[in-house]
Length: 349
Image (cartoon, rainbow, N blue to C red; front, side):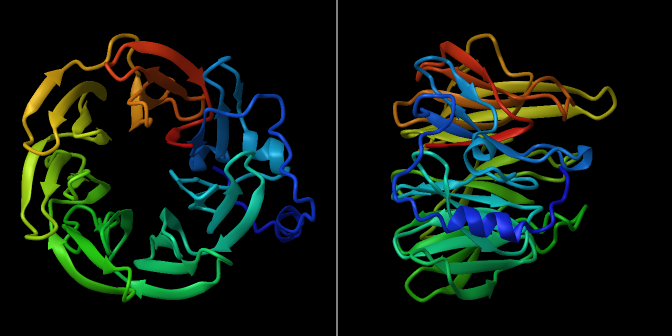
């Protein structure tokens, strides 16, 4: 994606509208959900947000641009939703957008260094910065409260009780990742890092079960050490290997796992789709999705209904074509697919 210089005048105009009535999203009924697309930084393609209406199959390919008249910027990451507002980080453009959840109109913007993930709580908006910090903002006015050093290249966050757990990947320190292998435990009440929990190499995606345990994808070194999924007891710090896996989602207490394994001699990738009991770690079933299957999955999520969404590039190693969002019901039966933006990486609703 093309790196964007700050568009201060346009952003001020977008954020200071005096019209209190949200405008409808152009060219579509209210969206069932929105898809965050990263674009392709190296190919000069900006990110986007696609609006999907599952009732009609209609897709607005760049709903953010259609609503606000500006690009969302470079390499947006999977965002979060809280109390009628979406928060979406744009990594290469050094900002986090606050958007009206009904129509994607800009409500505010935070300027922050290389944001990788966001987490909205009642009082705070937390942002992980790739420079090794966790930034805390007041959610009410997006003012900076505190910035804390947490560790090299923090990736993802999850909230359990009074604690927020942050995966510390040290992901730029190939091949050892020696300053990663851990989760930072951050106290929301004290706004301090309490301690660290040891996990596998290069931790990234992080989820919490309904019972308060953590599930983390430790991505290895993309070569000799495979990507692995661990369950972590936050009270004891003990971690248990569940399976090899690249992307995860929780469907109640069922853990859905996509494992993408690439042969670096032939550059062929084989994807497997499995389900595990998130509490016991026991394998429940294999081949959980019926055809058609994604060619190059990037992310998996579940809707509150249990329906399964898998974001994929159009084909193996195609980094410039519009991606595909595959929609399956809770049992893995194919329902629909939607053409969205380049490199879809997450769904927000």
